[in-house]
Length: 573
Image 1: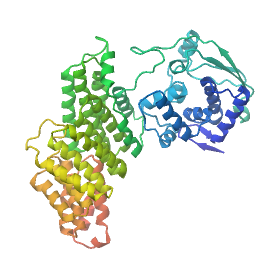
Image 2: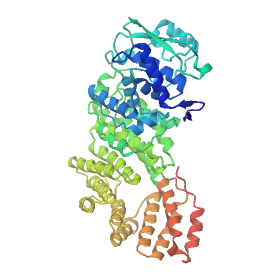
Image 3: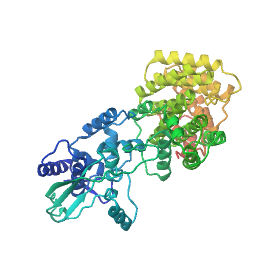
Image 4: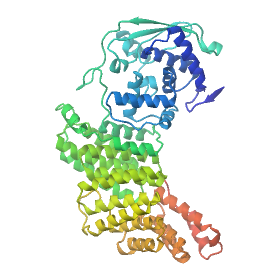
């Protein structure tokens, strides 16, 4: 039986077929323990040739692992080598075996785990001309990174490039002799193994690092790689509560120190405070546009800016003081891109950007920025229904307030905890956090400062607290807060005002104030036209569904509102 995979023109056999190939190969090779990495590579090549699986799956089957065992092995490898913990789950591993690319740091770990190269796991391709590859192989046998499959001939599988980086300094060649061509018989080929010892003790070196150590996947490398994938539309991310919580393992306090110490004067762009200020200015400009017109309006501009200008500066030469400013500014930009992605409906991508924002902010030593990134993740989890993860992340936000004195920031994070707890049905925690948030916002000065949370105005607090109260069942207080948000404090952004009006209509309908609901929704339709926001788009769909309720049949004005909603020009992207 065969099944079709996501890769064009590839048909894959059941996993049991790959296991049979492994058993036959080990029988011929004498089942050495532990299995040499090159032997696993040779078996994986045969599984790929005969069964057609993704190369990561072939490598796993060649190692004799289930998905659960593979995940355990990766975590054990990370722990044994004292590496940064990762939030890898069975679900994510299965996704990778369908062709979804892991993030850069995880790709590096998987290559280390299997002592192989990104090309061997199908994370990258060699686009050099065949003649160049042949010449490189003749000059250095370790440059042969693509396994060759030649029926009825002997094939030499050299240890792959990164086996020289992560494995022993001396290795061996595995000689595989095919007895039949799979394409002719449809059966797994019979093959014999032999070894050749004594490969040269050579391998690539990386500047600033000792032999045998891979390039570090620090916060800078990770956020740039994410942006590049985003630009090329080559990466698809699935949002999950586990992925959100994995952000808590990202901070690397020594990242900035390592990067500035390793930079060579004159080897890259010299960066100063002006570049960090430029990033902050662009974040404000692009953020103002997104707040007015929706997250989908200019996200591509923000991503391009990240992957061109900002990437060059992050990879430049700077002092630690400048580096902290630059990391913080880049964290703001990553957070903005994450918010834009969330607002246009790309939830998995939003989660990744929020995580990168948190890593950069924590590395920069900026507690407010770090808490704001965690807040983004928490609100994202609330929207997706990951209630426990939302509460956990929100509590971490509030812990950061011990280092803060800005009332708006303290109100911001406590309101997030109240929101998460209310969604989780924890009325006691929600009420306590909401009271702390109110106390803080009442102490906030009328003129916003330079705080990253300065945008959290009393009007925005009134909106959020109103919806928290609605979740807790206090509809009278909820409507009063939404009224304050709209008519007393005022809202300076069209997108924000539209969302508040939609929420007000919903609360009024729950209170059986049908005329009031229609009035709010009528103004919402006027405000929402032309916005590029998934949240606004969803609010239109929610309103349209409610207008079809039995209790509204025949009510004056309902047909007109439904017709206006039907032609409303909103876009989720």
